Image (cartoon, rainbow, N blue to C red; front, side, top):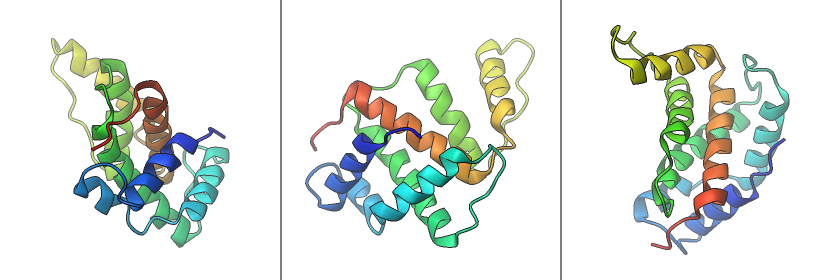
Length: 147
C-alpha cells in the first residue's frame, strides 16, 4: 500500500481551515481520516474490478476523491502532461464518464484514449484510490500553496 501521509496532512489542514481556499476546505468536511485510511488500504489490496462492500468506506473514499480533485488545484506547480493524463483517466472512471473515440489524426487524444481504455472497467473505488494516490505523489513532488 502506498503511504498517503502527505495527502492526509493536506486533508487535515483543510479540515482545520488552516490552509487553502474555502472551496477546498468545504470539500474536506466530513471525511473521517481513519475510515479513509482503512478504505484506501482495502482497495489497494483488491484487484482492479472489485468493489468496496462497506458503504461507509465507499462513501468516504468517494468524498476523499472529490477533495483530491479540488486539492490538486492547490499545488505549487501545475502537473506535467503525463501526470495530468493519469489524473484525467482515473477522474473519468471515478465519475463514470466515457471518452469519445478520437479522430485519425488526433495523436495526443489517441494516446489519452488508449490510456483510458486500459482502465475504463476499473471499479469506482479502485479509480478513486488511484486518483488519490496520484494526488498524494504530486503533493510530495510539488508541495501545496498556503492560501
